[in-house]
Image (cartoon, rainbow, N blue to C red; front, side, top):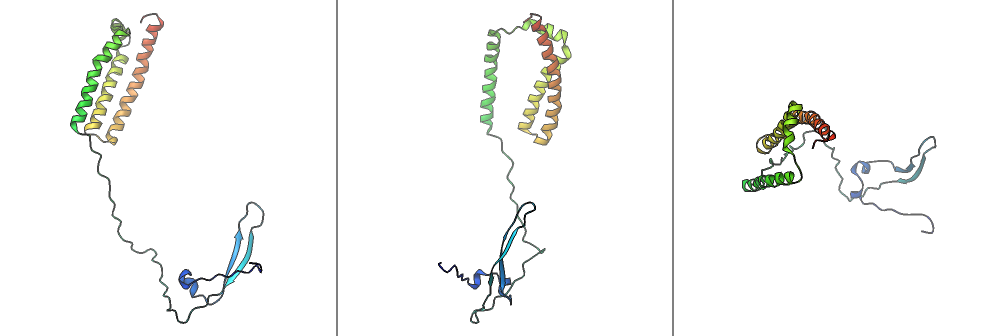
Length: 185
């Protein structure tokens, strides 16, 4: 407006009941915070005097419930995950088993040499045996997890077998690298 004055009208229902019972005028201030050593802005904005309507029914002030008994919370937990139907599991098991001969044939056609198997096991029998056995053990752990175990039973076993796989695998592959560097393939 041109005279820089404004008017605000509030109904009683818009004002909290705690403020309606005030006998003095309420003062409102504009506060702007500051950082560092500068002084914040704090200026009175306006005074609000509440005039109660004599014809309006008196509002009753209810005290809020604090530290009291609250209604019971009923939790709904998800059911345990279910395994897929057996026919799907059997289909994919058969698919993996059917792929193994194809993998073996491809490995042989690319130049796999089984003649060095006796040299590998002869020069480092413990590491090769543990490495192969730990891979089979890890597959067994995965099977047990899929069929009966939960995650808390699976993790300690997988950590133990994984450690054996890592240590024996590094020894076994060091032996394989030594044979390759010697010109034996």
